[in-house]
Length: 114
Length: 109
Image (tube, rainbow over all chains, first blue to last red; front, side):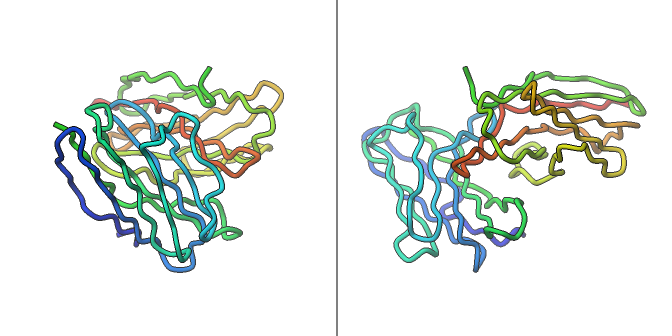
C-alpha cells in the first residue's frame, strides 16, 4: 500500500458523459501528478500541481480535461463529453518536494468509454 | 519527436543473462533521471535514480551520458522475477516528470 488513494478503481461510462476522478495523496506530499496510460505505453503526463497551484498542463490535453487541487491536498480530474479515445488507466502520483525524487503512485482509475 | 524514447522490446533473455536497456531524451536542460519498474497491471515503482557518475545497486547499474542525452540500465545475472517493463523517467527543467514508453523484459528459465 503506497498510501496514495484513487477513487473509483473502475469507471464505465457512455460516450458524451462527464466523469470525475479523485486522488488523495500521502499527507505532506506537496507535488501531485496526473498521468494517463494505455496498454503497451508508458504513463503519459497530463498535469501537475505544487500545493494548490497547477504548474503545467500537457499541450496534448484538450479543453475537455480539467484538474483541480483546491486546498493543496486531494485532487480531482474531470473529463467532459467523454470519447472512446479517453479509455485508459488514469494514474495519480505524489511526491514530497525536497525529500528525494521518488514518486508514489496510486492504483489508478480504469476508464472505459462505450 | 518524443521527449523520452525507449526501445519497447520485448527483450527475451534466459536466466543468468546480462541485458541492457537504453533511453534517450530530447530536453538538454533535463535535471534528473530515473528508472522505474512496472509489473503487469500494477503501478510503476522506483527502481533507481541515475547519477552522472553512474551508480550501482546490486545487479543493476545505471549510467548517464549528458553529452549524448542518453541513459542506460544494465541488469546482470537476470532472474525470473526481473520480468517486467522498465520505464525511463526524466525530470525536466520545469519539474515535469516524463516517462518513456517502457522496455518489456521477459526472463525465461
